[in-house]
Length: 62
Image (cartoon, rainbow, N blue to C red; front, top):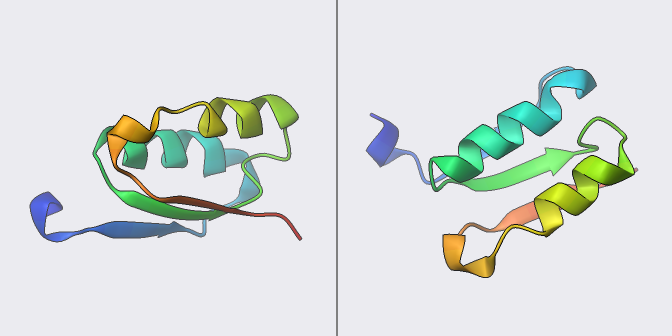
């Protein structure tokens, strides 16, 4: 089933966003996530992922 899923939307409690996002990226999934734990370090960690992973990552801050 994991091969049938192309993208995920992370809509869990804020404190779990970063771990869930990183796990999805490691599995090669496209990710839509809002506020990865409100941490600038987590934001930079996600944005430093090489484009060679071929994942589309959309970070939304409101």
